[in-house]
Image (tube, rainbow, N blue to C red; front, side, top):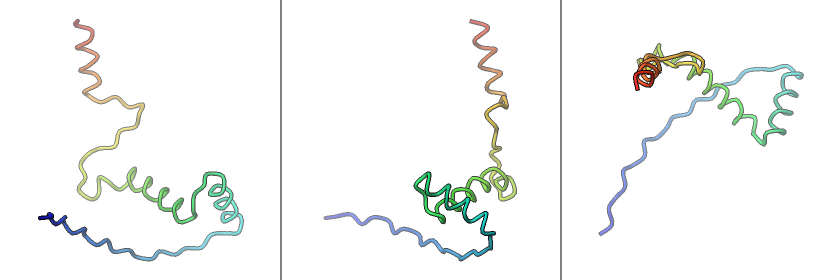
Length: 85
């Protein structure tokens, strides 16, 4: 007998609209054309990146986002361990 796969949870989408100037629209269109992106796809990527950088600590995600130039305590421990050997 075939097993049933788990049902996928429905995702609710909400429309968002805003206005941009002609100059901003032409810049967006040029960028999308150069990188083979759609306008909506570009805006979703930009919004996702912004939210990952700025909103994670406000909504219960306690994991801090660390920039690539910032050391963590684990980096320091690894350095100390490698010096001991």
